[in-house]
View 1 (tube, rainbow, N blue to C red):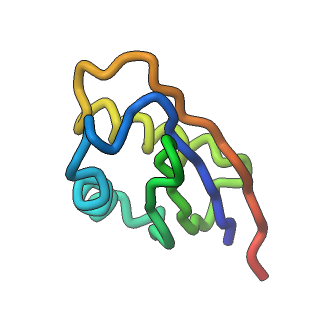
View 2 (cartoon, one colour):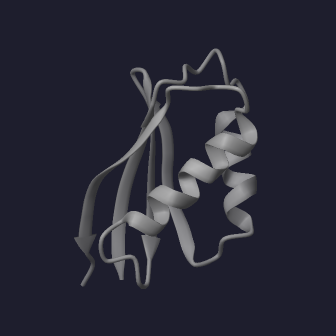
Length: 89
């Protein structure tokens, strides 16, 4: 199991007021990623999720980017990055 932390920069909380509910709803259809935390940290949205197979964090980053694109359409210039991947015991 891997704990993956990604963030999204370039969209403000004011631009996406229902962020936390939207992310939680979207990831219900992605059961291979179990959300552990989703919160605003300054001007970045941080998502922490557990995955059985995402060794490099790329899959979560891609799915998170898809979620941003779906729920915050028209927002350009945002960037999703992988912050860390930790193997869980």
